[in-house]
Amino acid sequence: MNGDAWAVIGALAVGTFAIKAAGPAVLGRRPLPDRLTGVIALLAPALLAGLVIMEAFSGTQPHHVVLDARAVGLLAAIAGRLLRLPLPVILVMAAAATALTRL
Amino acid sequence: MSAGIATVAIGVAFGLLARPVIGTIGAIVMSIVVFAGSAQLTAVSVLAAGGSAEAAVLAGLLMNLRFLPMGVAAASAFRGGPLRRALEAQALVDASWAIAGDGTGRFDRGLLLGASIPQALGWWVGTAVGALGGAWLAHAKALGLDAIFPAFFLLLLIDQVKDRRALIAAMLGAAICLVLIPHAPAGIPVAASAAGALIGVRPRRDAEGPR
Image 1: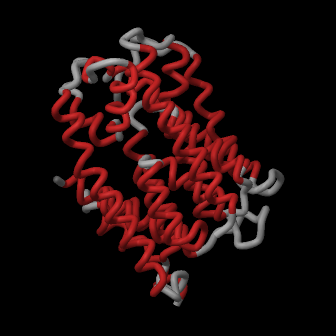
Image 2 (image 1 turned 30 degrees about the horizontal axis):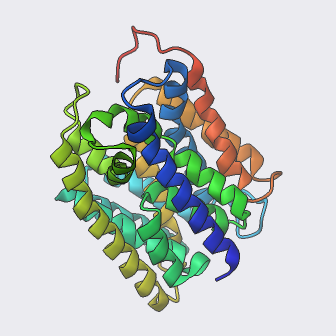
């Protein structure tokens, strides 16, 4: 493990502490401007969609977009979600579907 | 209770993902000192894809910015001077915030602080199990374990997409990432996908309720 990883952990710890503390300790109960709240509320869906794309469709070589067995795992996860199965079960289904596709 | 079990499962997934990237000790330390699952997963995903430390921190902190309006909303649940309130505010996690809010803007102090204890224990235990157990999983790819993370992010995303604006932001984020992967340095595509949230500057039309 290199120094970069510790730097990331440290910076994230300090930054997260400050973000969580800002509202209750500094801003009090004054609401944030509507436009700012609107953008912040949409950060999680935008970033999560980017993460799905990168984790499912980026190749082992950099800069390559690939369609492989992981896509089958995503479809299995959607099926599990539609069936309202518990989260750990869905994740096992996704892994199993991908593994079977690779046989 | 079910929120605690889900947190353990996510912690195991985080430990598995993080061990090859930041090591067993790094994964466990990160879960203790950062204590924000989605930001930790984001940062480690960026590092795993070969992104720089700066890109990993940027993407992780963007993911955590949601705690700013959540903290403002729940501000009345905390007591004491600024320092004590800042420390109490560390109990804010998605699950405790959701459990403590009654839907009308009031937050239950006991639930907010209390719910974070099983969340923290579940997160740390899960991370340790994933990070230590990952060493035995030599054939991660044959077992399809690399499909767990996109599947997990997709499930989190489905929970987040509650109205049309969130759906549009998600589609923009996905498109930005897809277009940038062949061209931008590793880690940048995910951080840039946050730009999909900029459609939030448009005022919400009153006619559009939750789906």
